[in-house]
Image 1 (cartoon, rainbow, N blue to C red):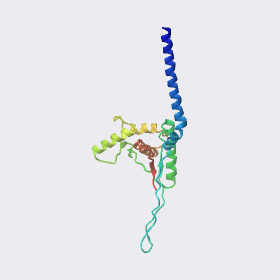
Image 2: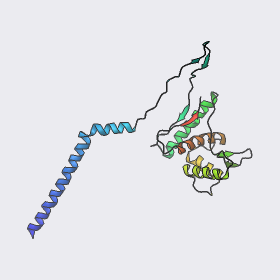
Image 3: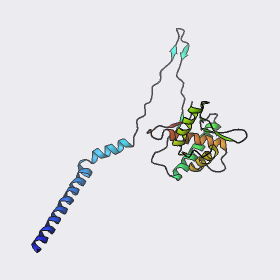
Image 4: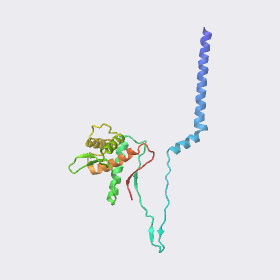
Length: 205
């Protein structure tokens, strides 16, 4: 009987030894033999390629009068790191967006604002999805609610607006006009959430 138990114990030690050996070999393979390959894959996941278009040049008529010419212009775009999703990160990004909006407007620029919740002169909030077709509007509202995580259809436009202000850490002393511009940027982020490395344009030209 003792011989039987001794054999079982030896067998267990043998199996544990084999498992440990396999783990050591696998670790050696990952950290030494394939280290450069995994390092390259890691670097590739952190990099993106931007295509920079060359200038077209001038198009002149026979009298050398320009018919078309290149004009240098810049767009301001917001890109959020997909790994930064905490409330603290949102607060930092919101402050950056507000600072950027202030700089643009102080220098005569205009902000692209297509936030889907509008407020009229009487202070009444409503959805605006750019259509008068009830069926199309309903589809766009459903899409918007899904992207903005406002799926409860009982939530009014005002309640959605206030929840979004809270979610994106917009300070209480910020008025609706600025809040709508900031939330318009975040709305653009949510609409491109599942598309990697797509920035949201804040201002053009």
